[in-house]
Image (cartoon, rainbow, N blue to C red; front, side, top):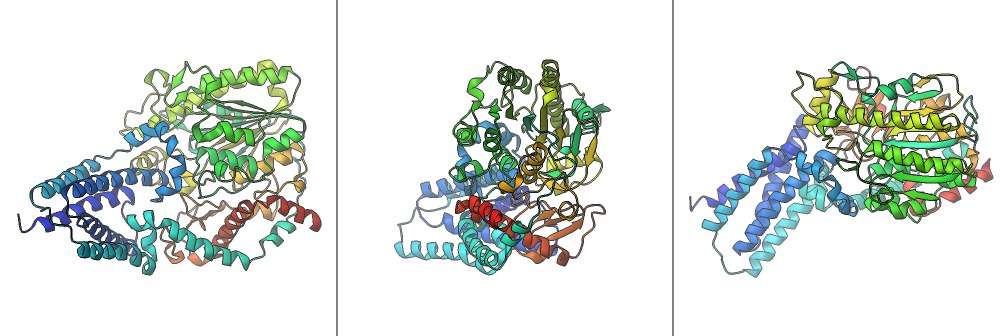
Length: 610
């Protein structure tokens, strides 16, 4: 034992890292991916070992070992939720972590116990077999040099390691992001994207001005996925009210609509939906672009004579909404501190109480004879979906051995009931007949990397799920006085909501720069529209009406995946090159405009060339 303790140390590091990568990345789907994963595990083990032997004191080794284990467990849970090791990109959201602690605890895998036991094994070896030698300065610098060589060089020469090996992708992500940004800037200079936006023709259609002078209510529903609309669980409709609204006169339902997030999740859904500007990977868009000029919807509504209202049952400190909403031109801001918080469910104020109290605030404005634009952000359907049993209406299926779908549909039903009560109040007060109501999900309810939740969804749906399932959210627009019922199947995302609403309101879109399109249009613009994600699917990925392209996480185009959305069969990668490049160009161009605060200049240039 005394002779072999160093080998035992290496074996324990291998076990720890094998569990870490298994619980994070899962199993590789190709031979190339398998070899890269093996290299990553070996490299991480070597880095762990050199970090351990860097300093001879036992207290140092105990500390490094403990931090190593807990860091990897935390990072594994983080990866399953956000599909990235770039934890530093979300450091600005750290103060929100307290609100999602239940998610962290629910994400604790039994495999982590083995990691902890292996860590205890390392501690045993350190205590009993490692000697506290005299600090050797020459040896220290030698080991430190080897550590940094192992950290930096492999990623430079083996590009797939940048998105796979934990030390490389976590600590060197700012470096590689900077390198990629310079490459993107050079690529952007070679394109003439301004010509595209200058030549975009703003056309009226059958929907132009249908909502003229109507009030507007945006209801952004927490984690509402399209999968529950018009679906049943255990023989019961999950969202009976929403289903009836989808089928009623005056409703336009988009079933091929997708989230478009950066690093802000819910707050990014708000930002993108109200600005038609792409989010960013530099943090939550609200904060990153806080001081930049945008033609946000509340500002335009205010200009058109509307009172603007923002309502959310959570504290104003969360996502810094209290300050952000002020800068977003909301006249009246009602956040958690403005609500009676007696009726708490999971993360905070229940949706039923939220809608009831919010109705009173809306009615006050209506009683004053003012038109209004209101943003309402719900909360109850939030992961980990642990709705109290007494609030659940749908019994669990007898053969359902999983928890995720049952928990999730229970929350979705609760929010559906809350919306129904809200609509009843709007109708009885006469507000419904003069208000356009827009209902949409903010983001996904599960990630593909969370195997347990993914398998629960697949059991319920009876098929495999992919990113076009995970990222698919409903969009429903209810128009008072409109006598048709329409379901649109064309592809769109949250960046397209703003121009769609502008058209319905009959407001002059030529004066407002948007990266999205009017989803109620027609022709090539609609047919060629695509979703350009950059988080759960990396930048360069896209979803169209018939294809999904997943840009490889290692940044190598040739390792990417293109499939047919109907047959789910792979397609030649060459078919994805053009749209993939265009996705990068659009996102990079948007970031360039916003960073340089010249979105308004784009509008001026458009005016000159009209």
